[in-house]
Length: 101
Length: 411
Image (cartoon, helix red, strand yellow):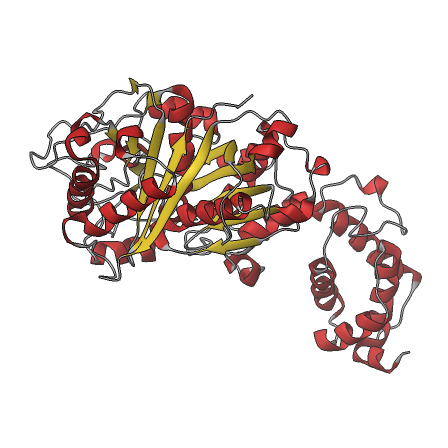
């Protein structure tokens, strides 16, 4: 369980924005927290899994995919802002995310 | 399948092969008798008996970026990209606006043996391995791109795969179940394992010292086929739909026959009996008589048995006319594109029908005295074509003959 700081949030936001801009070949300046990954920038559901792998390595997270999967089913994250928020929860709680509502 | 009542037209074509990245480039090079066969560079083939193939140009990847976003490109193999790019190009050139169609009546049916997820794939990693390995992803990507909600699938009948795909597409339209189907196929077996495998079967030419002359259909010197790769797209559309949108029509897809030889996993039936049966059935199914055929696009692989038996079968079906019908094999220039061959060759035959022009059979300096048809040697030929057939005869005994007819709009 990691301690979340403003710096962590900035790092996550930067990584997420850069990832979507690069993968979807769009100008990063056109992205916002309200950007819908599938409807607005033709992203796909696999992208969140790839991001998760990036953050697992970056922060050494103890998190199982099936745990995230169950959480995502209950709490879909469709926008870039929602993905950043979910990533923060995963970094903070790791597998403990399953105990959250 | 229900009774035929709707005329099926070819309203879009696309080809990617060793001779070019679009239809016009391929057609010009084929009519000029150019060869796309050269030394393999996709991987180190130095230890193989066969070290030549008809590879698609390395410039393809740059060209593909115009059609294929990086995100989905990473989820595709090179072969899947061939197919996707070829389909998008064919649709664009045929001026189709799917917003003007009922998308539930539009489909994608392709033929492919493999998605090409092999060791020859550059940068092979575990990433997206499953998606890349799904041959059905070829039709799925195209369907997703255009939002087509009709039938969407891939068939595998080896070297006849895309001929089968077009035939199934024909039936959907002829029976009134679909308005438009993007049909065709893509393939590449240019990788170490499959060339080694074909070498084990003595199926491939080993004429490595002169690649351009290695594929020699109907020649006395033929020593096996040369592997090619690429994609072919044939857009089939109901006449009603084509008229509504004033589509440019290449030909009528008049009919076909699919048969199984039920004989041998590799060898065709003796004396071309199964091939003759397939051609005869296709003529009957399309309401065409042997006298109506003005061009035969042969399977013409450059293997000993195929070329001998296909010649015998043509003699059997067309009798005294056989010697006066131009017969050519474009595999002499683009190699054998396996699952894509049926569609690529149907696209070429459609161009022949439309332009009254027959692409040549190259490398026929030494004729096999047993094979005595008019193989259109060395030079393309202007020739009026009312109807043409294109043959595909596959390992496993999967045979297909399709009939393409010059289209004349009725008042």
